[in-house]
Amino acid sequence: MAYVDHAFSISDEDLMIGTSYTVSNRPPVKEISLAVALLLFGIVGIVSGFFMAYNRVGGDQGHGVFFIVLGCLVFIPGFYYTRIAYYAYKGYKGFSFSTIPSA
Image 1 (cartoon, rainbow, N blue to C red):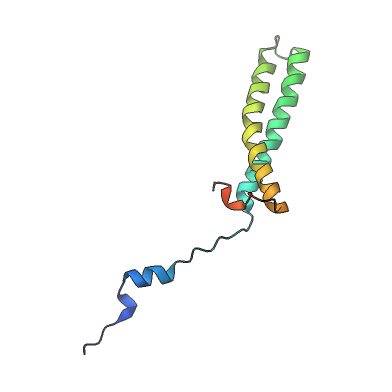
Image 2: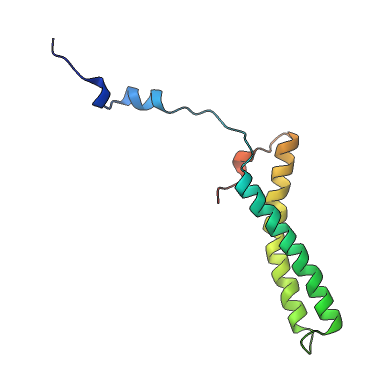
């Protein structure tokens, strides 16, 4: 019988043993902090846009409307992923940290 060095051989059995399919439910800190930052910047954009539109900063209401629209576009994904992270943290059924995409 010949000597076979298994340290350098790759077989299907080795691949199945090496990978585990356990679901890690640890909170993704980087993604959650990005979602919270989007949420906060969206709120600031909406509030400052209303302030700018009301006081006609820049001579007309166009600048304020632009900030309101930009704030809404930033607020929506921030709110969505922050809500998923909060519900996953609280342990609600159907929510887990694995549904938050990696950044």
